[in-house]
Length: 84
Image (cartoon, rainbow, N blue to C red):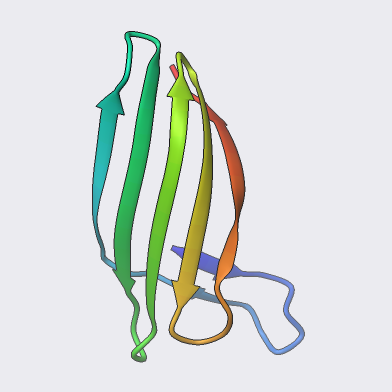
């Protein structure tokens, strides 16, 4: 779900089914390469496609993500995550 709050033009939210795939390739017991690809299909003919590549070292992930809607410019940047 994507949600916009506080916009002077009005608050809104978009909910969409998501299809995707994730690949995790272990390089050692502590290190793995990651790759994700997904597509989101919103109402009103709005679509978004995302991709992510990164590495996981034990519980910490560092990745780069691109999110491209068919309306407006693509969003992209680094991300950092911790999981257990």
